[in-house]
Image (tube, rainbow over all chains, first blue to last red; front, side, top):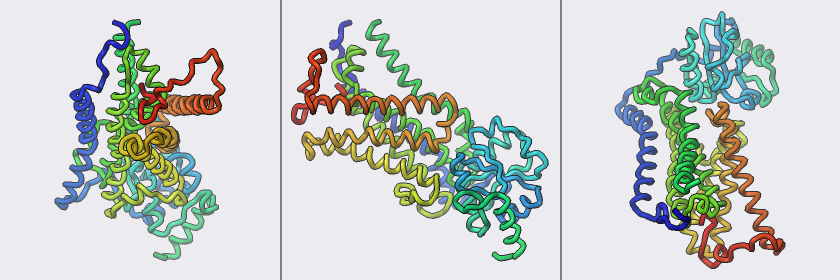
Length: 177
Length: 244
């Protein structure tokens, strides 16, 4: 078959319609779970997370007592910018292969990100690996921590983990809301 | 090598490129059926589905960059007269996934926070934090790509010959989206996908460099006698496209 003897691909309207139809179908499939969630919300159904939700102040107290470990599942530059005091940094993609030693001894493991979109995926990954006591922050991730007026460590705040932990201890003891 | 074999190989390559990041997504996230059951915090399903939409948009965008830059060469290799109709047909598909990606993200954020998050998603504050900065690059990339797509559709009549120049901003849009994907993409750091994204980003950059070099050579008339002169049809008023 020589060159230039074929019909132009996609000049045929039917082929274009098929391509666009397939693309719209795939886009609709991707949007279905979000649509279903919106419908459930409109019906007044409350989403149920399989993981326990811990208020930030309670989580902070448990972390200072050494009973809770925070796992920051964001990217390295995000962790360096700011993070919860003494949080272990393991990007989401590495959770499946991470060394679980830093988590041993903790009763509760709280993976987190900014609003816990990645935090929830991290919680699922840790639960799949059999880590017990996986929980999430009530109010979701760093945004809940900030709302509870709790200090963060990192370059953005010019604080080390130990400085932020000291500040956290003082703030929890002061009983300030 | 027959043209039929080449066409099958090109189709296979496109399929592999489109499927690989989505396969990495499925491998890491598990069955998407989980996100129909409702056992997750509000907005999680929209966030998760945003990721394959982004992968599809990026790979389609790369195919469009190749067709837009070297469409003539690809068409000759495949024994076809032109790939412009394919370039145009794929344009709408690419636009669909380009828009679906941030829309699902904004939708997820809205469901999670209970407040509309569309403005925050499409006009993020880059000074807020690293994440928002990288989302900002994605938003700028989307704006640039929309301008490029509009130039090639509605702008062809309004801008006349200038539409090609405006359409070329899609290179910048592609490079910005490469940076956005590689900096905060969830699967783009998983090794096979990481190399794929770098390869696509670099080839996109190389095609832009070749295009700029060709443009400069043509503009300043430094065409060596041994090289073929630029095709005058491509620069005729209102006609032609590089995706021939």
